[in-house]
Amino acid sequence: MSRVVILGGGTGGTLMANRLRRRTDPAEVRITVVDQDDRHVYQPGLLFVPFGLMEPGELVRPRHRQLRPGVAFLRSAVDRVALEDRAVHLADGTLLPYDVLVVASGADLRPEETEGLTGPGWGERTFTFYSVEGATALARALGAFDGGRLVVDLVDMPIKCPVAPLEFAFLADWHLTRRGIRRRTEITYVTPLDSAFTKPTCARALSGLLTRKGVRLVTEFNAGEVDGRAGTLTSYDGRTVPFDLLVSVPLHAGAPFVGRSEGLGDELDFVRVDPATLQSRARPEVFAIGDATDVPTSKAGSVAHFQGEVLTENVLRFLDGRPLEPGYDGHANCFIETGHRKALLIDFNYDVEPLPGRFPGPVGPLPLLRESRLNHAGKLAFTWMYWNVLLPGRDMPGIDARMSMAGKRPLAPAGA
Amino acid sequence: MPATVDAEGFLTDPAQWDEGLAEEIAHENGIPELTPRHWQVLRYMRETYLTTGSAPTIRTLGKASGVPIKELYELFPKGPAKLAAKVAGIPKPRGCI
Ligand SMILES: Cc1cc2nc3c(=O)[nH]c(=O)nc-3n(C[C@H](O)[C@H](O)[C@H](O)COP(=O)(O)OP(=O)(O)OC[C@H]3O[C@@H](n4cnc5c(N)ncnc54)[C@H](O)[C@@H]3O)c2cc1C
Image 1 (cartoon, protein in one colour):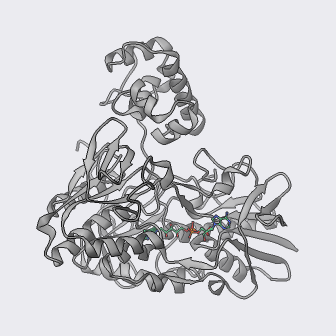
Image 2: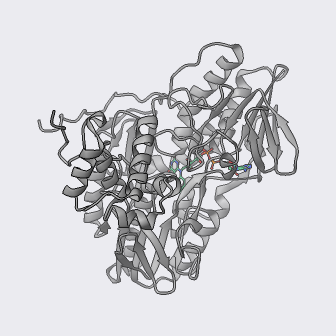
Image 3: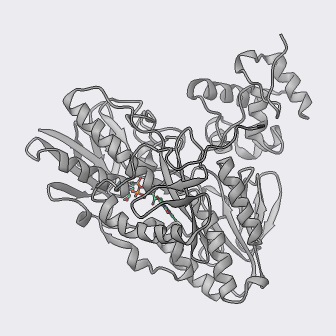
C-alpha cells in the first residue's frame, strides 16, 4: 500500500487527488488531502464581487464535496514537513507519514509586509479584492463611492492571476461609467513593472486599452508605504500617489509552513521544483503543483489544470519506479476581462509569448490578444468548467496540457 | 578584450565581469564609490544569478541579501534591482510572470 498525501485542497490539490484516484486502485494507493478549512473558494469570481456582478456566497462550496469517493479528507492545518522522515507534522501534533507528497498549498497574501497597508484605513479606504472578506468590504465601499481618486496598486510580483489588477481597472472604468460618475473619478494604475504587464506583446495591447479607457499608468513604482489616513501611497524612491480609495494587490508568498520545512522552499516560501517534471529539488518523492511552486509562469487555475495532467503521470511513474516525463512547458491560458461584456484571451508558455491569432476550441475559434464578446462568454463559462471539469480532473476537450501553435500568428522578428 | 553590453548597458556575458569593471560601471551610473555594503549586495546578486539562472527581485534582495530595501535605494538609487544587476555584470532582471 502506497500513501499519497496532498497538502492543500484548493484547485491543484483537488484535481490531483481526483485524477490520481481515477487512475489507481484504492487497495494499492491511499490518497489523503489535508486542508485547514472546508471552504473551497472559486477565486476567479472575486474580481466580480466588488462590482456586485457576483455574490460572495455563490463562490464557496465545501472542499470535501469536490473530492471523489475513495479520497480521504483531513481537516487540519499543516505545521511543517520533515523531509528526512517523510512525514507531515500537523498543527495538532499528529504525524502523517507519506510515500509521495504533493504540496498544493497555494500562495498566501502578506499585506502586513507593506508598511501601513493594514494600519488605519484598512477595510475603510484601503482594500484588496484578493480575499472573500476583502472583496466583500470593497463592494460596500465602491457602492458608496461618489467620485475622486481611485488607485489600483500591484505591490510586487509574483501574484496570483497577474492580469487581475488590470481587469479590476477596466471593470472599475465600466462600473463608474454606468453609474454616471466616471468623469468625476481619476483611475490610476500603479505597478512596479516598467509597463502594464510582464510580457511585452501583451503589455502593448494592454497599455493601449488603458489609454483608451483613460486610466493613468504609473510604472516602476515600488510601493514602500501606505498612509490610509492621509490617503497616500509612497514608493521607496520617494514618489507619492494620493488616493481616496486604494485597491491594493498585496505581496504574495508561499504557505508559511513551507518556510518552516527545512530545504523545501525559496526565500519567498515557494517550493523549488524542476519546471518540467514538477519534482522537488530537495527530494525525489516530493512534488508540487499550482501557486505553491516557484516555476516561472503565471499563478493561475489553468496552470494548475495543465500541470495536473503531467504531474498525475509523474506520480504514477514514480510509484512504478519509472523515469519521470519532463512534460510541463509552462502553458497558461487566461481570459482578461476588459469591461463592457468583452474580454481578451492570451495563451502562452515558458518560451512563447502571448501571440495574436485565433485559439481553436470546442466552441469555435476565440480571438487571441483582441477584445471580443466571445471571450467574455468564455470567461463566464469558466465558472462552470471550474467546478465540473477542472476540479473533477477531466481533460478539457480540444485543449492540451502542452501549448499548441495552431491558429497563432508568429510575430515578425524584432528589427525586421 | 573589451566587455560587450546590450542596448541598456547590461553585460551580455557575466564571465567578462571583474571587480574593476564593476567600479567602472558604478561610476558611469552615478555611484561614486562601491562601499562594503554595495559589495554585499553585488556578491549576493552574482551568487544568486550563477546558481539559479535568474537575478533576484528587489523583494528577495531585501529579504535575503542582508540589506533592507530602504538602504538598497540609498546604495543603488532609482531602481536597485536593475542597477545592482548592471554593476554585478548579470543580465537585466526579467521580473516574474
Ligand atoms: C482575484 C483572483 C482572480 C483570479 N482569476 C483567475 C482566472 O481568471 N483564471 C485562472 O485560471 N486563475 C485565476 N486566479 C488564480 C487561481 O484561483 C489560482 O491560481 C488557483 O486557485 C491556484 O490553485 P492552488 O491549488 O495552487 O491554490 P489554492 O486553490 O489557493 O489552494 C491552496 C490550499 O492550501 C491550503 N493551505 C495553505 N496552507 C495550509 C496549511 N498550513 N495547512 C493546511 N492547508 C493549507 C489552503 O487552505 C488552500 O485551500 C485568480 C485568483 C484570484 C485571487
